[in-house]
Length: 269
Image 1 (tube, one colour):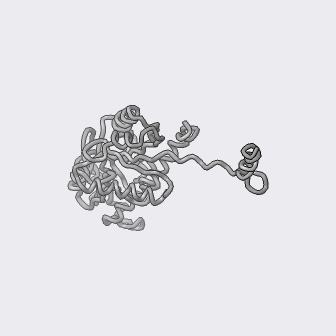
Image 2: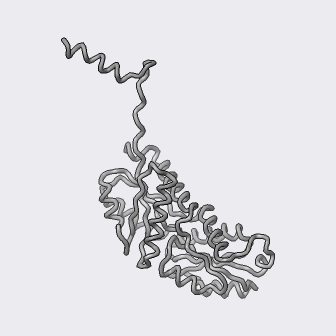
Image 3: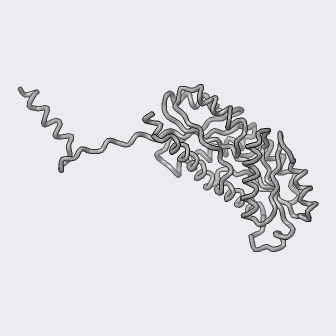
């Protein structure tokens, strides 16, 4: 009798005053996995780790991890294996829709036990242009009211390059957005796999009477390609995008977009 009579009281203790049950706790959000390319330049690993930390600062309750396509640890398959069957959204730290975004990352994700979605690359997007503009200003690009630069200035937007036409289209779109911001011509150029090269783009701008040409670095982090492109600058060369606050916001924006596209939390999938 004692055990029977005790059950209703136990149940009543679960109901707060007022007769309403407490709502169930919200499910944990899917983890965010930053997918970096990887580089032999030690500055690249420091940069993507700093960006990971900045993303974590902006959204403290979100699990944030890092995985590399090649050259640096942790490699992406190892990061996903450590997650087990947990849900995750992969955000490529890449700036256009090339082979890595379309093939390598989705195939790696599909082979892992984790329940994953792959977000869009970071570019093109106005937040990316904000960072490109900031890096140019830091390198010595004059303020907007400098009429001499508007008459004689130009920018080469240096990117890695890809044989995928969608990647080139994304870089051209970023160049147009940056041109609108600066009020001068911006020509996309590539370190490999596509044309024109940075040197060719510099000469093309010079032929148009643009003799104050800067190189904007459309690279997430330092590396061989970024250094090669900077050496071609006849005037100033901006630093790579790095761990800028707007880059962290852009990462979280891509994460939120991918999460919304699922129609429901991955955690309940």
